[in-house]
Structure formats: structure tokens, C-alpha cells
Length: 358
Image 1: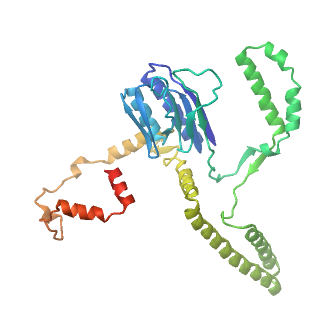
Image 2 (image 1 turned 135 degrees about the vertical axis):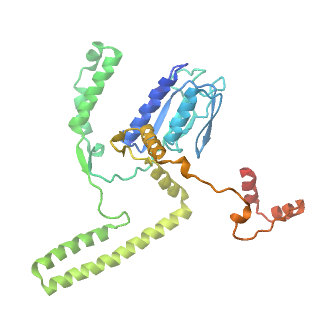
Image 3 (image 1 turned 30 degrees about the vertical axis):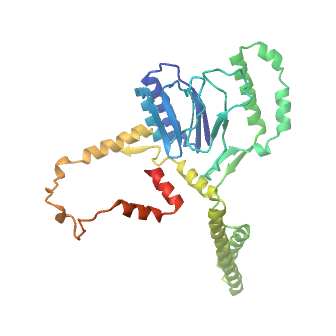
């Protein structure tokens, strides 16, 4: 499931306003566990400078209690801030937070409305990641099998001009939304998804062999016939042989993809990171948590109750001989020439990496 949000926090919003916003986001994550989140909006934090990094959320500048709380909360949620398009005053008021780093934000070439100097028009490209296959049976609307012709006839049967003339703009939107939802319920069928019991690398040939083998085994158990056992044994041997073939092909394709398309590997790793590391609900005695903040407080309560400062009795430090069971030379020295000789042996890309790290 993908979650999108539009946010507006007025100028001079207080800390409780920001806490209410971040609490709603944390509750959304813990209750629905979305695979991806995208939040776009005006946070009115002009004094904050945001750095785009694959390592997480980084902010600097004049930090207030509201901006500090926002950064702490969204860092906990593993969000990234992706917008780097400043307004006419060189500030970032419109922020784009995402649970993964692949979306891109650019200045829009064809704005829908006249541009505002405080809010430049943005073009957000949101590539949908491959969702992790659900592990439970659930129902879903099959839009590929929907009867769109009947849906169009149904929506066209309304006299929208006269209907909208009776309502305000907001009420007209509600009326149209109700009609649209009604058409979805009428003409979009519901299907049941059941996760496959076979591994992902299982081919169609192997699946058919396994099903046939199970049928042959049921026949043999019923008849106890030698001929039926031989049929079952033959299919069992075919399943083992085809299983080795399929698994070897899967391993080979995976290894080839690591070199030919490493982006698929990192895409898989990033998808794994979408699942929160902490369960949505934790229990400590009779106390239950429903949000990540409450879960963190339960951990704090548990460890503070078991921590005993008096148990930390460190022996006085009497010298390195108590800690080093082996001898190390203590008269090592390096000259400038030694450093120069070592650096000259490094390859160019290794040297650049060391300089960047320093």
C-alpha cells in the first residue's frame, strides 16, 4: 500500500501543532504499515537548510524546537527530504518527504497556475517500487477486469450540470466522489489473493509435477499397488530433478543480475527496509504501545527498571600490562617520506576515497 499526503503548517506554528502532525504520521505507519510514503507540503521552516543524502535526513541552520522535533520524528520514520529547489528568497518552504530516496523533484516547466515567488512549481517523479508480496490472504479490487463501459454509462446517467448547481463547490465534490465510489462498487469485481505455497524460483513445469506427484501418492495410499507406487516414485524422481534445475537457474540468474543490473539488488534491499524494524504494537506487562514513540518509551521503562548503577564496579586502571596480553612496540615513528611512499602506492580511486572520508 502506498500513502500520499498533502501538508500545510501555517507560519509560526507551535510545537503542539508539529507534534500533532508527526503523531498522525507515526500512527499511520504503525496502523497501516504502508510500503511507501510521500508527503508534500508547505512546512514554513525558512531558516532550515536540508541536505539530500542517501544516508537519511539531515538539517542545519537556525534550528528551533519545532524543526528539531520534526527532524527527530521523521528521522525515526526513515524519511528523506528530496526537494532542493529554493524559492525566490533562496529558502525551502515546500518540502517533499519520502520513505525511500528514488523519487526526484525538479522545477516544473509548465506550471498549472501562475507561479508564486515563495512557492515555485515542482515536478515530482514518483517511481512505484515493486511491492513486497503479501504473505496473507486478502481481497482486492481487480481494476483490470472492471466493466468500464457500464461505469461510463452509469456516471453519464446523472444530470451533473443541474446537480452541481444545487451545491457549493465542496459539496459538489462530495456528491461526485460518492457517485464515483458507487460505480466502483458496482462495476469493479472483488478478487481474493492467496500467496503461493511454492518458492519464487519454482517453474510452472515443477508446479505441475508436484501436483501430479501428490495425486499419484494419494492413489498409491489407497490401492497399495506396486504399479501405482512405481508411478508415484517416477514422479517423485522427476520433481527432485526439476527442482535442482529450477533452483540452479534461479541462482545463476541472481548472480548474473548482480553484475549486469546491480540496481535490482539495491532495489530489493531498499524494499526490505520499508518494513518498520519495530512491531506496530509492543507489550510490557499490562501496558501496550500503539505508536513508535510509545514503543520507545516502553523500552526505556524496561531497561531503566533493570539497570543497576552500583553493579558497575570497575577495577582501577594500573597500566597497559593488565589489558594487553601481548607485546607491542612502543617506539614506532613515521617520517614524511614514509607517508609519501605509502601514498604513492595507492591506486587513484582509493586515494580519492580516503581524501573524501577525511
